Length: 78
Image (cartoon, rainbow, N blue to C red; front, side):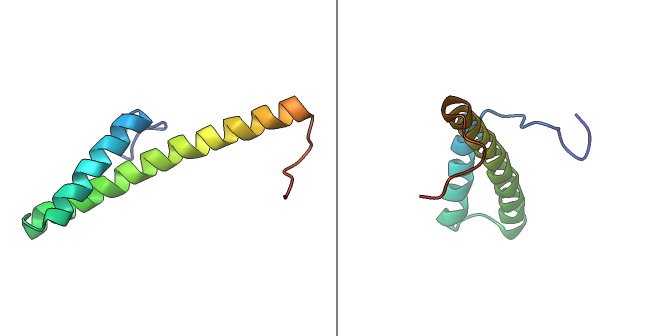
């Protein structure tokens, strides 16, 4: 793992989402010192980015599968 972060998410979507929920709950509780709150916020941002990468990848796979099934050349607008 490089200091700038891994090329792929290091956590599964579900693990990242669950940890993000925990981070949000801790931040919303209001009983966390400022320094720890900042660290939690930063971790939450990392986790949100991991989740977004997983969701983007899933969307791309669904789009590719739809195109392959229908022989569609481009996205269709409803």
